[in-house]
Length: 429
Image 1 (tube, rainbow, N blue to C red):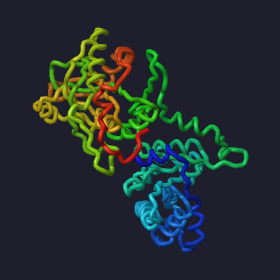
Image 2: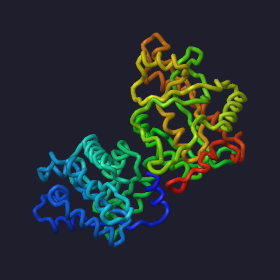
Image 3: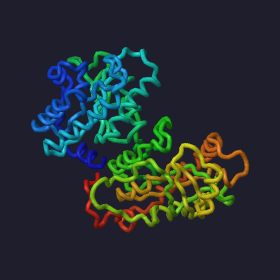
Image 4: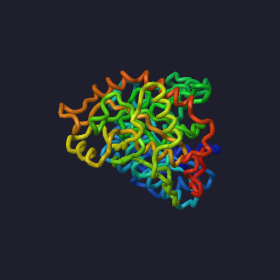
């Protein structure tokens, strides 16, 4: 993903276009252009190669209409997975044949039904299913292609984001009046998409600060679906170099009750499904023995003490996959290892921050005692939300105080030099 983001941010890219129209003419026996992926793969590859040799830097998979709704209209719904997977395979094959390192974008188009004809959950499922099929075969990014209705465009964007954190390009088709056939003004699209999940940028204590809601503005991302890589890259791209990460955690020891603030110093990864590195190529091994920034940790501990919220200045946070809470047996096992906190969002944030040479420090608020510590009914979501809400103002004030007291220079920070001597496969933003 890092390579893709670097290229998108560095220079204009030339894309292909009109694949479907060209294939529909060339493969007359195909019930739709996307069926050519299965019955005329050599012609799909040849067209991709022609675009690449003509100068395309980005090619789109031949999957614009390969959503389950459109395929069903051609009696191809039973070939949904095959059509989409073949679309990616053929684009990647064309890249090899042409011998140029072009980007392969997974193309997703509108569902082709009238507004209101499909329920929102059915729309979301159709888009998410296609995104999952395309990502599974190795696209570099996604393109939402030639949408006309804002509601459907945002539904597609949310669905893609529920599946992946790969870069997403949004396209709309407008007429001479700069509006789509559905009445969507082109000038309204950037603001609507930017409002999809904005990073708020402002000033705190005379310092420029960015705030990013990791779960999304409406808390739609469960812990295992948060776009961690996109989030940390976006912060770095905005100029962020230090990250304070408030997080709700369970306690694995009776000494840390609900409302306790902990500034942990160690991390254990017990997740299973998360993308946790930007380094998908090359030999890039960052030091991670001490996962959190010592400079920012010290400033956070001092600021908390000065504010009257005396923190636990050390602790080991074990991060689980979620979204379920731990069983009693799991909780007892975690505690037996000497680990003190359990959460769901602290990894891979910390390691991604280190790979971007960012200082990262969690501010862990204990919201509950974990199932193996408390002999009651166990942890509930309501309990967690209630304790976090009761301490949110206190936590907000502490973040502001830490920001004010951070040293101006981070030249001596461990994290600032994490990449010294390492040759990266991409340029940092």
